[in-house]
Image (cartoon, rainbow, N blue to C red):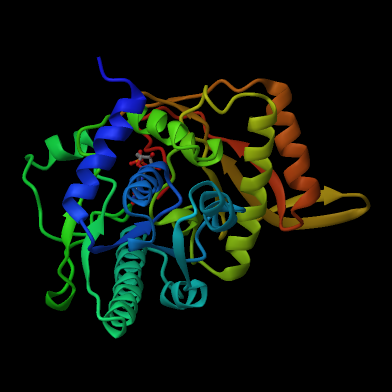
Length: 326
Ligand code: XMP
C-alpha cells in the first residue's frame, strides 16, 4: 500500500536521479497536473527548474494571480510569466469558427512557449549551462491512451499541440506517469499546494476563447470574465464545487435581446450557464442546481455586468450536446 508521502519521496528520489545537476523547464497552465509536476521537480532540484506561464488573455479572473502569487508562495518555484494577451487577441481577430480558434490558439501558444524556452536556453548558455529537460504533467491514463511509449520532447500541453522544433529538443521528465488524477490531487495537497489549484475544475486549453461565441475581442473577454467570476463565486459560496464537474459560462456575443432596467430599455447580450455533472467528460448530465443559487447568479450578473441583460440555463445532456459550446 503506497501512502501519498511515500509516492512523494520515491518520485523526488527518482527525479534527482534523472535530472542530476541538469536544468529543466516546465510550462504551467494553471491546472493541477502541470502544477503538481512542477512542485515535485521543484522539491527535487529547486532552482535548477524554471517554470513558464503564458498569459494568453483567455484565462478566468484571478488565474494568473493564482499561479504567480499562490503557487509561487507555496513552492518557492522560479517562475517566468510571458504576457501574450495582445498577441492572442490580434491573432483571433475576425475569427468565428471554433476549430479555427483552437488551431490559432494552439499555434500561438507553442510559438510563445518556444520563444520563452529559447530565451531561457540563451540565459543558461551565458552562465555556461544548458537546459536538457522538459517537465510535463502526463498522467497514467494519458500514457495508456498514447500506447505507453516514452517520448522525446513533445509538448502535450493542455493545448494538445505537436512537437518542438529541432533546436529545442529536451528529454522528457514526467513525474506523474504512474498516477491517476485523484492521486495527483493528493500529492498536490501533500506538497502544500493551494486548494484552488488542486481542486480546480477542468478548464479547456483554449480557455475563454471558445466560450465567446462569435469573434473574440478584448471587451467580450472582459465581459465574459466578469460573468464567469460571479457564477464561480456563487457556486463556491453554495458549497457546490465538488458536486459539479464544471460550469462553463458562455457569452452569446452576436446575439442581443431587449430588456428593461430601471426606466431604460436595454439591448444587451445573453450568457448561458452550463453546469454539468460527469465522471469523465465523455458523457454528462446537466446539473440540477438549486433555484436560489441560480437566482443569485442571474441577479448578480445582470446587475453587475452592464453588457449582459439575460441569463439562460443549458439543460442539454451530453450527448447530444458537448459540454463546451464550441
Ligand atoms: P466537450 O465540449 O467536448 O468537452 O464535451 C469535454 C471536456 O474537454 C474540455 N475541452 C477541452 N480541453 N482543449 C482542452 O484542453 C480543448 O480544445 C477542449 N475542448 C473541450 C471541456 O472543458 C470538457 O471538460
